[in-house]
Length: 154
Image 1: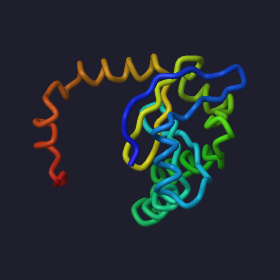
Image 2: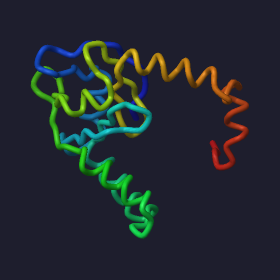
Image 3: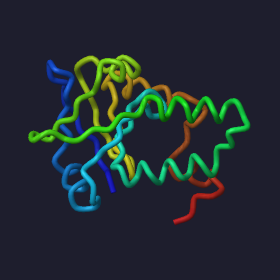
């Protein structure tokens, strides 16, 4: 499972180092070193181990009917922006210009663990997102928010 938050910078070639702890999870919990990079939700990039990507693809197939326009659009965006990748010898991943531009990544990057995926954020956009969320209608504690989510069971 991916957890934690790490700050880093993009190098001049558009590569970012995946934190050691996350690389350890990749090597210990997943058979394949293939990764899938795609546009995530809330203006970040999502980096999935291939095994997790396959699970997401099955869920999309089962839960998003192709008969609705919004579901087709979501599937197209998710898949067409996906690309296969692998970490290089220094634990870096290349983020193509198209993907950097889509989520506002210029130099400062925040990498977060999010259970089955790694999220790659522009540091500034993540800060803005956090501030906006805190000011929004969800100005409640984590416990209060958990109480409002019907299907959250531990």
